[in-house]
Length: 336
Image 1 (tube, rainbow, N blue to C red):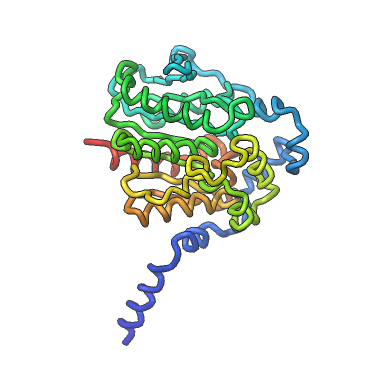
Image 2 (tube, one colour):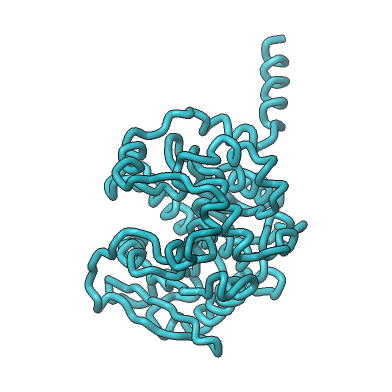
């Protein structure tokens, strides 16, 4: 009888909605003290949607910390495709036949690839012993959707064809994106599948993923309501980014890629979430949808953390765990 009860309970547990299970694991509601100190140190203050709309767009585009130096010889600055898309190629080891990581930066579809991000891209290349191609895609409001999508996808196709000339192994390509860049990773992988090119992408890595940009989803999502204010990435900032980037296009699967009906056959995925991120449940939603479609997923929600694990010290255990997850996924997804 006890055995039958255990089996029955196990059956009920395993059929529960994966998003609900995911949320339970990451619902401490205790902000990491290091993050609390970080937010106080930078003098963080929430802005309403009305305040964001009134700010000069340049003030939002170029906000961020000062750049950190690294060896300039470790990067090549090139322009690719007929659109002259700027790409930074980081190869600190100066080796050849390295895995390729195509990086799509964050910034709400508004900020370009800022100098302040370059050191982290250089570190990314060292951490994963890879060549990092960082795509400086066009941003809004000067270039609204689909400019960022077109640049992201065309850059992927160019690198898949020409990456070996710059020292990369085009049989081991991963797409990696943070925040808005994570959305572009999901869209690029889906476009590649439609064109029969998804086999060229061995892994997609998405951190702080906005997967559904429809206003009605933002109003229905628990994490958007719980983390609307107070934790760096706000609900208002998400609204502002979406209305600036893709006004009236929210139901387009290339804006809200969760709306794509068939997700089968997409590359394996790493999805990283943070408890105090409005976008937390978006990542959980896409992880569950991919798994349901038979796609291999490694996902992790970091309790106590904010959007894209911002604010952690470089030696934080959480960042080491994130790197370990990605390394495992690369090892298991790349051809031997």
